[in-house]
Length: 444
Picture 1: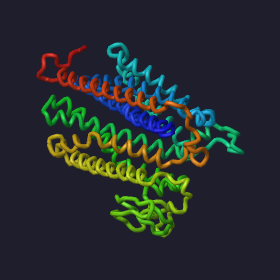
Picture 2: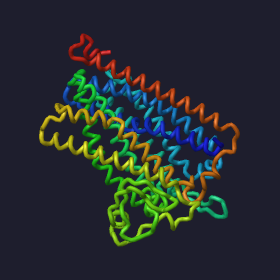
Picture 3: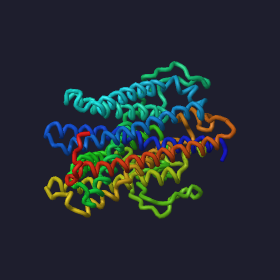
């Protein structure tokens, strides 16, 4: 493994782990705040127990996300110094603001965790809401920085120099809105299905059914709404990509030849040598219609893009297909749940539905990782699209492969610790809030 591959692998590994923690940190505080609100309105102690249980999970994942995020910050400087030398002054503003949001989140989380019985009850609830808002803001600000890499703005690139820097234009670039909306909804969908799946499993096992039913309803409802909105945000994002990054769109769709009435390709195995896709289902004209709103308009194919500027087709296409496919599965499951809920068919009593939610537990995060791969791999060979190539931004540092192994060990260890702590927390909750347990709703 050479230094270039090691640097890219280490960054990919770090982002792959951190994105999970970040998305949970963006969403779980809102679930916590909903449960807390229900407790304050109803006085139901079960909701108080649920709020406390979820808040402890938020604290665990917040701490882990802080560690992985700090490691990412160091990696940007150590692995990609040429990139940070030029890009740092331009897109540094969203990172600075993200740091501010992070500190607000940390302070608000401390207030919430230790504020029981010490603050006015509604002010205490508000601190939990602030945790959610600041966590969501952090995610959006980081995505804005990534969007700048896909749609560089806020500077003039003249003779290899970055002049006339405008940080505000850089932060609010053409891609930030579509990427932020798509990522935020994806976070709610993925986390919602993951949380709902865990509680669905406990319901199937007849463990504290009342407690887990209340938790399931909050998570499943949010997940279902997000899953329904996700294709709309995906369409918005894809249209933006088609306008700014035709090579990425062509790789996503494995679209080789520029043509009108371009078909939408479902599945298939791209063959770059023959410039064709085998074993695919092709829906005539649908890609042209989705991109332009007119099936007769052409969509740029990969053959019209210089070879050195083309992203890896196969992995981009497969990742995109995984993301869309799993998104459709979650959409269908969400629709079924909401329909049963609207018809008052008591969806929680249907074991087949609970089993489907259990099976769907990891799907959102798999789709999330696949979507992130589309965003990052589909931009290649550029680290700043159209301005700086990835190969020109890496550190020519010997022994980088050992750093990759070290970081891999750290992230695997972090993951194991988080899984253990969350598993122990679930067991503790199951015991503590069991209506048949003498320790039920322990005031501690």
